Image 1 (cartoon, rainbow, N blue to C red):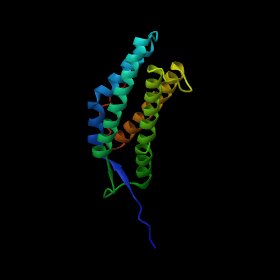
Image 2: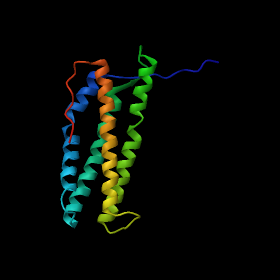
Image 3: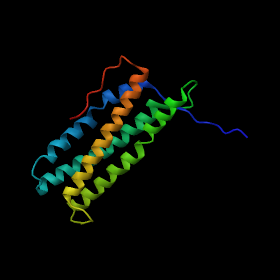
Image 4: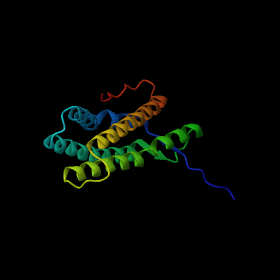
Length: 159
């Protein structure tokens, strides 16, 4: 009995365009970075929680668009090792999104006085870790794009 092997590839032109056009995602990451640098009064925390929520919603749409138009299953021709790399990168979407959802939930609980097991500093530390993972993920996708489109302009990254 022969097992079917699933292959996956990217549509490098669409994936590059999706990344280049998502200024809102990068803008939100920058706004959050700037908001984190301020003293966290209740008003500042409320604003930060709102930014976290907007980022969560934007990331859900961003990943959905990437998966719909930037990736495709069972291409006619793809190198197996590249297919595994592409699958590995795409598989990062759910855990990244879930991690952000947990951060948003914890931040909202703190805002509404529903103390959980952590405080604002822990939420911010978790967000920094999430942001590092997201930026690492984005860099991996960029490398895949440049594997197929060597002349593609790099996408501007948030600081």
